[in-house]
Amino acid sequence: MITCLEFRRRIGAEPFAADAELEAHRRACAPCARHQDELRAMDDVIRRALEVNPPPREAAAPVRAGAMRSRFLAIAASLVAGIALALVVLVAAPRAAIAREVVAHVLHEPDAAAPGAPLPAAAIDVVLAPAGMRLAAGAGTVSFAAHCVFEGRVVPHLVVQAPGGPVTVLVLAHRTIARPMRFDEQGYSGVVLPAPRGSIAVVGQGVRDLEAVARQVFDAIDWDA
Image 1 (cartoon, rainbow, N blue to C red):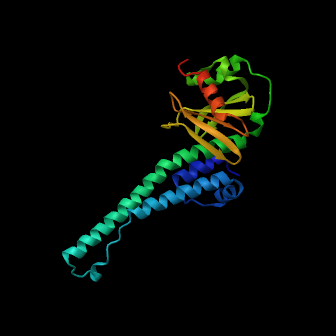
Image 2: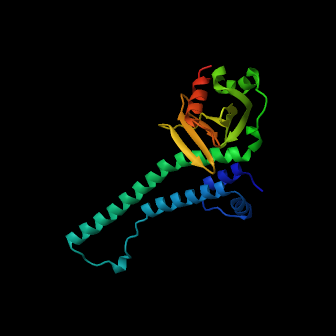
Image 3: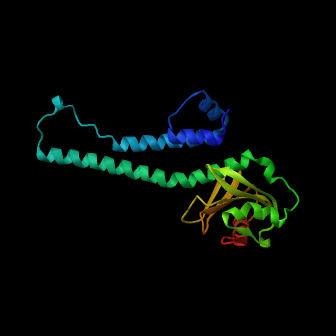
């Protein structure tokens, strides 16, 4: 079966693509199926907004100026409404996609969040240094640090053992958001914070004061190491 990454690459290029491999993955992976459904819905909205079918030439009949103006205004209103809706989808979809992608990544690597011995600073530096960052001691106990593929990019993936439970930290230099966002997805809660370069996502399950934990990790990162 194809991976989530390959599935999303293929349907990103062609939302209505369908073959045996894609259909098998859709049935087995609900997050990917929802992602394709949203891409298809967005594609339909944009297509309908840009579709203006004039009447056949032979069916055309003389109309009064007032009727022509009314028809023009109706078409214009439909276009404006359709384009506005498409813009709303385009703006809202990336924010919702971050939540689904982050949680999907956590679900695909369940062992990463298991309790473990604290990693030495050198092991954490190996992951963060290529991105021009380092982590100070104030972040808490880091039990996992690795490079992971997220949306086709290699990103730092950390797990911090917070008092209320483990939290997954993904540094998303390629994902820019204007303001902090909170989400709840498939039993997980998460916070995405704007960062000097991109954003940082912090996700946990049943973690108390998740925003405080996220801010603690964020403040412990030296973004210009």
